[in-house]
Length: 192
Image (tube, rainbow, N blue to C red; front, side):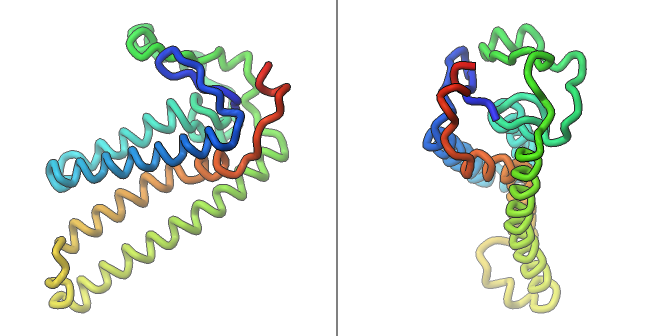
């Protein structure tokens, strides 16, 4: 895990656990606000796919895990592709700093692999609960359509929203668990 994050040209110290926890809270609050805004905009008809793109962007720039960038090392442990740097125009526009992946160690050691596996185990328990909710609502819609007529939101829209939230959670929760539970990093890690 990296001890600092560079956003818009500013270095943010992520060594203290409180900073990482604040970032996780802000990320999920931002994604929830974005999902609510998309709901009011067009009931996720055309904007639902933008939630997926926002999740990919959050992973790429802040969280990491499923790709290079962000605080968490990639989960797959493979070497980066040759050209993972964003275009120079993107770097200039966002003032992002992405260190050379060849210089950083991209492979996870045994402790990091164990943490990754445990985070995925815990994340997919939460995802299983969301899938049970999706199943329950779809079952109610099929077996008791009159009961669902009292719900102020159409069952299909509710199912779509829960599925969209489940996708967002499945892509961000393992990294969030790692950032939330990892203790403060040592002073020597900050200086490297």
